[in-house]
Length: 272
Length: 328
Image (cartoon, rainbow over all chains, first blue to last red; front, side, top):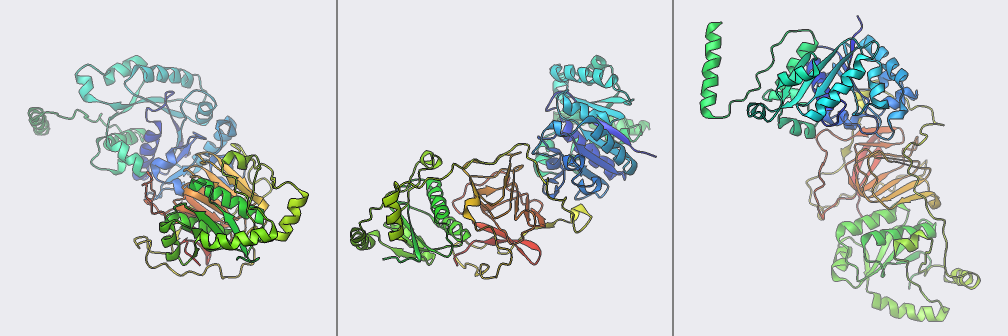
């Protein structure tokens, strides 16, 4: 059975497409799936940095397209997980170095060998986006609970709907801050889902561990204590078809709240 | 007095290290002869050990040796003496040289100091070597040696690998790129115990490009996404940021921190070398040898330190090794 090609896109920049790609990819690989990550952000590559594979890249997607190497040669294996591979973007070229048909072809080839092909899409709706979407049969739209990101996500969903061969798109809400939602300063998850009227694949809380993990080149799912890491693991499970309830991202703030939450959890356990 | 074996470079009018390295590079390039002993006239310029070492390494890379330093600066004298470089006081020399100059009716002129002057091709040198030959030239031509302006060959979208067949890996597995190792102890204090590595004594079958006109000079920082390609040697005065790439058929010398990808001896000369004040390269490639930086050794924020260890990478038994550049 051929694997599925999932494009991770957002329209707006800086919402966490690359972080999401790296983490979902790592999480899926942890669960024993064969995963390949494709960085299509040619000229502004970052995915290799997040995975800590920067120093292993010799051939890039442009080399594959221009037939200077074989596709297998250009795949960089992850340091820790042999199930995970990366097809890096070239830093010295731009988006026009690759076209839609070429990327589609690469996706078709990789689909045969891997369970999941995750395509990290660049920001914008130009050539780079068109390339990334070309071979995909599933999409994850990343957004944050901000008006600007939601507008862009809406535009992207519109473009995805008109795309042939793409039969499923789901929403991932990133950088959610429960405290701000409580004080009514941030749109809640339900609000966002209602505005975009789109199936939800996960909610990722804002987490400072993301910054450290990016700098270290080690995805946050490898950190057991991180809330965002757990959320990404849940997203990966949902992608695999499991039904996982949304992670409780409400972190108790005061001591009384903590005690209340503790008792509530205990009660839940007793009822079961 | 210096005889024909010596070559005098006057640095007295330079003020910044950038100017010094520029003048020196130009002087060495104009000279176009290897095996010379270089005499540096530093006058009152203060150079610390790492700066002096780097100058020495640059000179060595042109096949010459730094023999004598002329300076009146006490600190520079002490450092040079510490490095086993012969030190001379300019006064002792100038008495000598004034007589000599008068007898041969030769008036020394100063080095061009402003980068703009250099760029426009005005280049003047103080030759003590072939006085008679130069005297003849002076009679015939004005005392300006012109030189074509060097255009940096930075191209955002260069035609790469066009003539070369794709590089085939010895091993099919991509992850098998080895890590480059340091041939010395990092924690060793710089000033003590210089390792004696006579790597210049080994005979070279496939010599690095000695045609000095084929050297490209870049006077600014190479940023992410920029490729520098050259058929000869490359000298970069500035840093090479991560994401940049240098590909040269000869040697690569970086007067700064090298953090990008460097490919010297492209694509088959394993006798080529890569030198930098700090070798932090993501990947080092020499000829057909590839190596990567060990994981977790990246220096993301350059710690400003006066102690730079000029390093050189070369191929030893099919592996790329890093050496501290020492006096030899």
